[in-house]
Amino acid sequence: MQNGTLYLIPVPLAEEAAHKTFTPYLVDTINQIDTYIVENSKTARRFLKEAGLQTPQKDLIVHDYGKHNRNDLGQFFNELKAGKDVGLMSEAGCPGIADPGADIVAEAHKRGIKVVPLVGPSSILLALMASGFNGQSFAFWGYLPIDKEQRAKRIKDLDLSASRYKQTQIFIETPFRNNQLFEEVLKSCKPNTQICVACNLTAEDEFIKTQSVYNWRKEEIDLHKKPTIFLMY
Image (cartoon, rainbow, N blue to C red; front, side):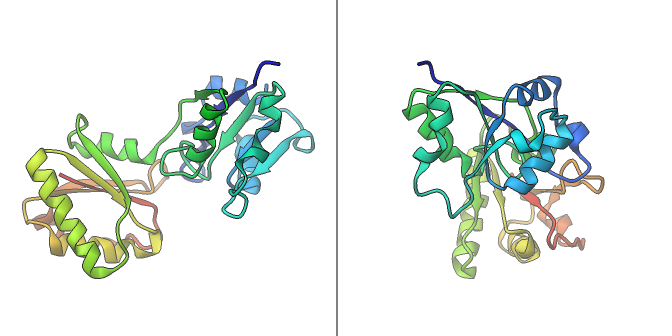
């Protein structure tokens, strides 16, 4: 029997942003699928409804791959091995990008299952696009160390790499620690280093601004609990 296809289905980055996210092809695809692997079943079902799902919710098979259900990835592949197409959804943005869904995708390749990524928003790429920084050479570092001393050292290393290799450095933080991280960036980087702050992307209060560390030091912004991408160049 031929395997099914694993479709990687992007979801909105912010509330009230569905119209910026769902393409006609995505809507057609979700209406041909009744099985999903998701990070959070409640939000996934809401996103599917917003996208125009016509299949009754009660008829869906929804597998939860939340952090307590990732020990046995084989449990998520029964339908795919039986020839059914399945959709993979993360909490926000593109599955597999700074997202545990990458493990599902890797397992699919190991099992010979076709993987099809659908077009949708990635906060990392949107931020890079809007920063004005080098899009030919860039590195995404995810979360920086929590330890203050280690974090300061990592920021200085990134600052050095940005200037030495002309490479854009991209990183994030848990939203409730954004302000502390940004303070450390402004403290540790050279005054002429360029920093872009991309906050609440695609939301109504989206904020994107690029300027030097010197100029950022003269400004006050509050990033507390706001999903933010930091870029350095």
